[in-house]
Image (tube, rainbow, N blue to C red; front, side):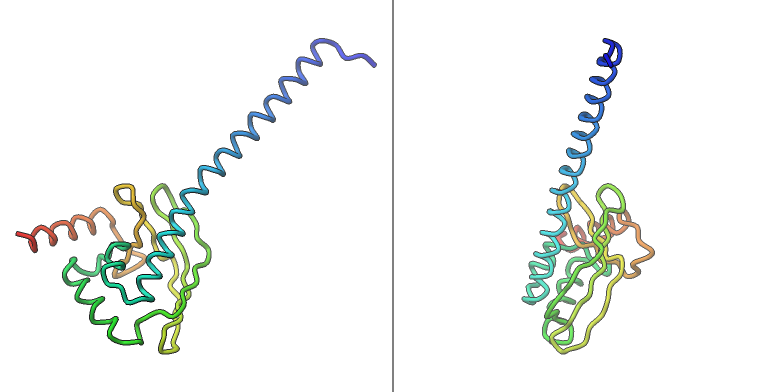
Length: 160
């Protein structure tokens, strides 16, 4: 059985197409990995700050829309005085990308006093090139742009 030039050319084109698609898929998967690694690094740094009662570390790694910067700093300083609110262990599960600049993760938190809780759809956002834990009063109703504006406005009013 002999192959014609047309058949050989067709096989070469199909083979090249499969190689091209394979390389594209590998590149897309590799592009996602560094971003997920950055998010995991943020979670590790944020969790370590919480476990060590490091107010400055927590403030550095999160956007907390429950209050302005001063209120949040005072809040963390106060709650870290009590083992009831200091995590002993934090386990993250189901980290997934929602859209560009937004990941959700489910957290299981065991506190030093022995109680535990689960936080569903904990948000991680990318702001000015940096990943941050995003804490809102209501995890299902949030507006990042509005929250950032509120935080910016209160920072300016406290520095003036």
